[in-house]
Length: 100
Image (cartoon, rainbow, N blue to C red; front, top):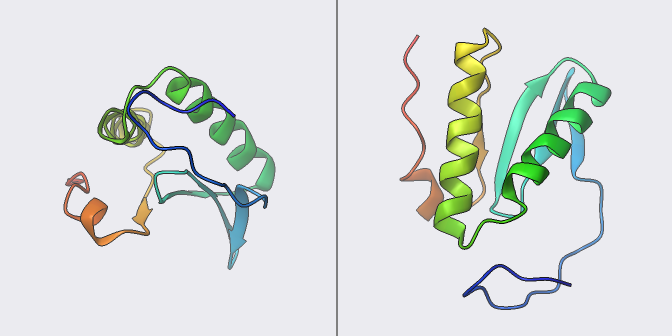
């Protein structure tokens, strides 16, 4: 398993990255961010793949979080606003401020 630069090797649990919550679909990043909502599982899987490619060469968690933030902010520009949630309190402090 390849690690990002300056990142300790970790054991990742094997489960689905895409999940449903109510009628909405989300995907989970290894940075602890749930991105969505999406209307379908297929849409969430496609978007998860896009984010995975964007994160492929990131060098740190801070860079990865910035990439995810830009992905979420771009969703507003495209008229498909996303509402990410954060699994870690320290990430919540970095949550992008979304204005309508």
